[in-house]
Amino acid sequence: MTDVRQHAEEIHEQFSDHLDVTVDDVASRLDSLVNEYKVPMEEARRSVTSHYLDEAGLERDDIRTGGTSDVQVEDIETDEQWVNLTAKVVDLWEPRSDSVGQVGLLGDETGTIKFTKWAKSDLPELEEDKVYRLGNVVTDEYQGRYSVKLNRTTNVEELDTDIEVGDNATEVEGALIDIQSGSGLIKRCPKEDCTRVLQNGRCSEHGEQEGEFDLRIKGVVDDGNDVHEVIFNEEATENLTGIELEEAKQMAMDALDTTVVADEMREKTLGYYYRVSGPTMGRYVLANDVEQLSGPVDAEAALIKARSM
Ligand SMILES: [Zn+2]
Image (cartoon, rainbow, N blue to C red; front, top):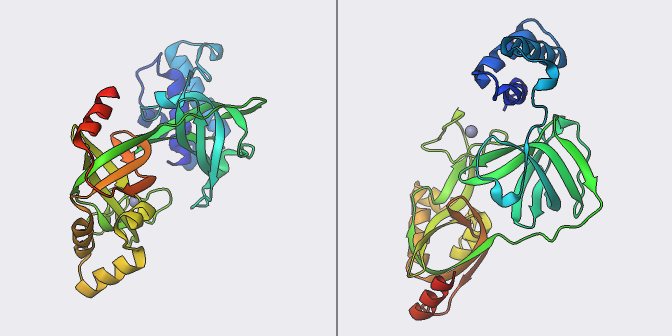
């Protein structure tokens, strides 16, 4: 998201109850001031905000500034919502791009969610195991997984308290009955913060790209009662199939065809029984833990378990 776009969304949010105006309208006004007339962003924001205040017949105090609602992690199931979240920093990861200041996992009683803090946001460093009230963060969705983004309007307040972080992991036990297209040796868009899977060398957002190799399986597990879509990332795919990334690349190179990798993976896994656990994101279970079961699951036991859920 560009800077202008982010500011435009914030302004738009303030007027969404008062005016029939789109984010694009706001963005184009901001863009013109900032990029054509070289007005500093803060000033441009004030000017654009004044314009919409006039149009709505409002005073500055009337508009929502942080009129966002308090939510818990499990409530986050809409894209581009401005919310307040009180959560503990469960894990910090290595940012993969310069535009990201911090990235990791937040958790509350209801589960965990990824967060991204922009490098430009000018916010304090979040520390692991500390609890924060994060005012005004925006939700984001990618392939059914939700995350929150901390931006320059976010208010970070450290709280002197602890949170028992809930486990939103789910466990699925059953036969792997399908490996869907887009599995095996794939290429991801190398653009910052994109990671979309390339289709015929093209990213739906960034066009033709060289791409970076990755392993993934989108599988379907049948527990005898229901089917569950499971995503195995590189590590989980290696665990499941015993095929590592380098080996997969070699296989594809030898065959001059990347699809041989998914074929080999199908051969090794389809019809076998697994216990898979991990967080659910949208309709997917993200396989954190994979265990191959020695024999077929006891159908009756599986049924009793499913009924009790
Ligand atoms: Zn891309």
